[in-house]
Length: 569
Image 1 (cartoon, rainbow, N blue to C red):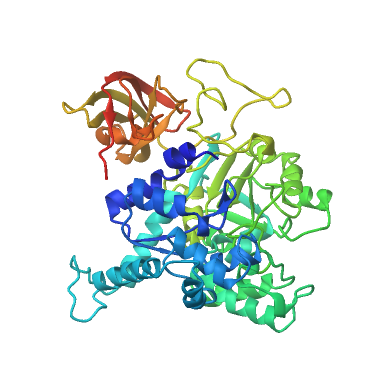
Image 2: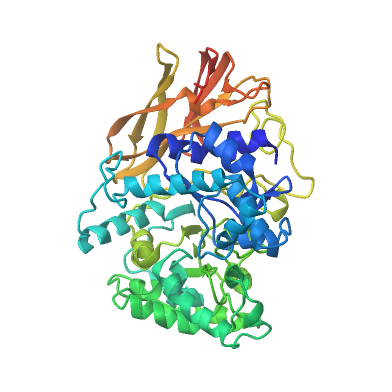
């Protein structure tokens, strides 16, 4: 990856968080860029972060990142050199413990790092502490926000709303929502698991870590030497047989939360049965004849499939979990294949927080519902969507490929590669029919909503794009959608993306009514790095695109844009 791509694409969320939210703490990543580990990369942590992006706060290390300089990357010979490299790069605080920074005194005395560099890091830490009111006799530069007491009822309502706005209907032929009196057969072990709905950074996963560490350090995990073990290896250490215990722990933490099977069974107007077959842990093939016989009398089959996400144990997704095959683990693909042979429509509930290669699932299913790690509200939210009590509100923040060979996929790919070229030229694969499976921004609802572009204009000073869109509800039920605004710079001295997301807004419209939405975005969101290293946009045409996904564009308008440059920091 070149520096232009890193600055113009990957750094954009950081730039906005710094500018718009006053971000005060940043953590390094584990990877190396062009041969230099991020934890020791002065261009990344100082020149880019503090110079170009304007960051003024503290940089902390991801856990064990400084240790990895000598233990993994071998750019340092010992703790002393690792500490000097990290501090010199602009990393101020070592986490989770002081394993390398205690050697900084030796590093200064040996001339590996200047004492002034230590002073600078100390000053940055003290400034953040001052702003938190933690330094006696010093007033914070801005008033610290005092958090209000947490109201559990309010927190629960927020969690429910987040889940309802995240659950994503990927496809539907009209089978959903389920009709009253529908005979439903639920298949898939995950339908009766609660742990499946929680990701790595949750209270559930947190509770699992002490148990996993205890098992590792007591020598209970085959093939692991506790004396040579470092913390970050926790993520990809397999601990066989611990899954059922984690499930029990989750149910103890959430005793009042039902599984998907339990929530569906509690719906009065559904006739629900369960077939416990198909699992991410299974190694044996299914008894296809028995499964087909078990679902024969159903009106609809709901298959719950997915992957477990977490830090420790038997998870196949989550932090540090790397997969060579982005497919459903166990015999779940076989389960879908068997269900495709049944004379009963199949609705698939997919529990995952990342894109998977599932064209067979899409082809076999009349509807696919994505549950992206919805937590404790997952089962109830999914049941609400399946029965029509809840409008599926999610839109994909990622792209689902048809095959693993298409990766990496990015809706904002540059001209000359990928899909969806404005010129109509589509480089494809000679052994793959079709393009994307589900595009960025995609998501369906139960209401028929039409989004139209009414107007797009540039402010008089040329700094702001304003877009007006009208959403019309043509159906007999209330609904919502997410109006998405993209833009494309038609010409540039460097290769430009075919589209960039500028703004989006959720719009709710009552049955038979319409609503106008005004979205604004600074033109700066289209800025890019020029040949001379400055950021800006050249004079020329910019096409504004409005739609309900990156591929479902319903209106466009081209504007003449003057040249602009970013202000010097």
